Image 1 (tube, rainbow, N blue to C red):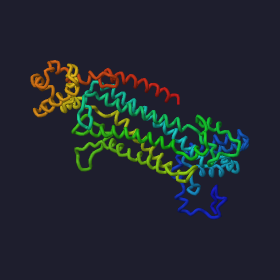
Image 2 (image 1 turned 120 degrees about the vertical axis):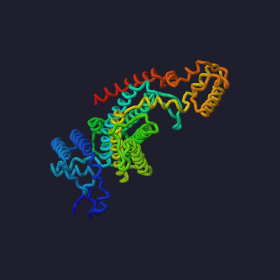
Image 3 (image 1 turned 90 degrees about the horizontal axis):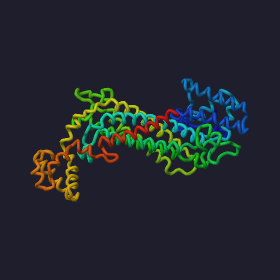
Length: 467
């Protein structure tokens, strides 16, 4: 009879269908490095505390290091009957080194083992996403720096609103991605506590040293409550939440890339390497990469909702439902990294059609606010100035003209405060340049924002080099 590592209490074997349904090795095998890293730290601690011999610990460590190399080389065939990566590795270890391998699980449960592995895994993946975000923000800063004087329409409700620079628009996304970076950093800080030693739920009666294993694995401290250490996945949910928000920002940016690359807008041209064609329409150049990133956002939202739903009704401590934590996390990691890896070079290689942006400024009366502000500067209350400017917009629209094409005598019919200087005041480029307050689109404000962003990136670059 095929006996499980936990099979002493059972007289019969697990049904094969149930065994396959129950097993997680198909997906959790990606955590083999983390599992081995945790087991090495655990074995060394057991020896340091006198719970197992130094000789047994040395054999365990050597065996685990050999198994890690064999898995990396593709020389290991995992066993579905061994259920998960934890028991597969223990089974491989025992086959390799004999009786000493059976001592590894002393003072440990799979409950604290899996909680440890997924924290280690996510800690590493957050670092990888941070690196991609760092590259993305650098790309945004570089592109913005080249376009501080490239004027384009800003929009609200997808209607032309006010003139801004392309750099100003790009830096709005840089700020969003900076906050995404910070959210992921916060999540990494909060998850950096070691659950190893929590056991199944109530710790262990062996005299272990949880601080030793926590330090060896780079954690700030052990978790403070053994029930909490094995039974919650809020650290995974926090990662998924941050990932979902980051994907939302990517999706919004991709939506604009799709719009801007259309003939109707024509603000940018995507590189051929990040576009596709049509099987029937020879003229088509489709922004499929941007559309696919926009679509994949829904997957990450689903991953977050899936794990929230799994966790919402579980009593303490561990429940088998929690095996469902890994696939949403793995899918979100893969999706997020895959999208960033494609998005960054797509952004770096797009061609900006500055002249088309400039031409598009003339329609839409996007200097109407400046006309109202001009009247306010002459002493008219804003609400009255707003009404005057709105009336002139309607009149210009009926005449098929822009506001700056209306003659002065026409303007003065609505307010005697208009003078020749109105035309300079509502110059489209002038409208952008005078918005020089902190965070505004004027070149000097944008350049100041870029300086601050470069300082932030320099700090992030330095921190990245030290890791």
